[in-house]
Length: 193
Image 1 (cartoon, rainbow, N blue to C red):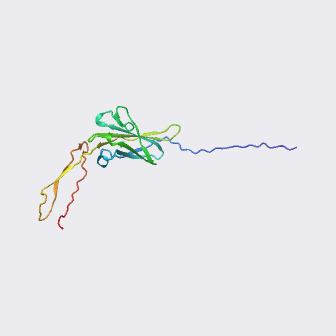
Image 2: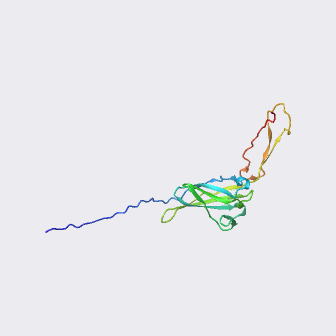
Image 3: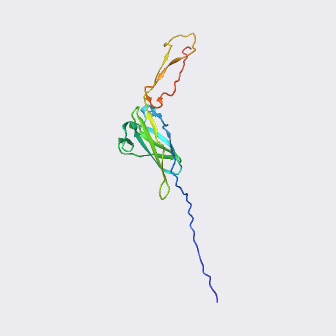
């Protein structure tokens, strides 16, 4: 008599996953906090860039732009309008860990203060983690500063020159950082052959 042994087969499936409960960490690198955003290429380009960093597992970055001098007024890049409803404008994750959003230059008014607030979402399942940046405030400034040299007259002849003095000012004065004037450069030309 032959006794047949029972045959058993067991199948296993392996799934690798990462347990993630951490919200994405965001930072705004441009514009700088309490800094100034000039018109791109002296107002000749149609967009101004805001950008920053985020965790590499982020799948979505959204940016809220608020005009602080108009109160609860938010920019909607899709409709290119300001309105009272909070608008989140989608940024591009152009490389893992880096995001950028282009905002129409028509959104800005010279001398006004704005605030960026950024929201990042990762691709965790079953529920995505959402993180927020700190608020980033900045001014839009396209006013050119003025300067003058004092103590010298145009086309004058000097025996020597021990000092050059003058004034430089910017009509844009923003609290708490004061003027947007960053530096003064002096160039001397020798007009004799």
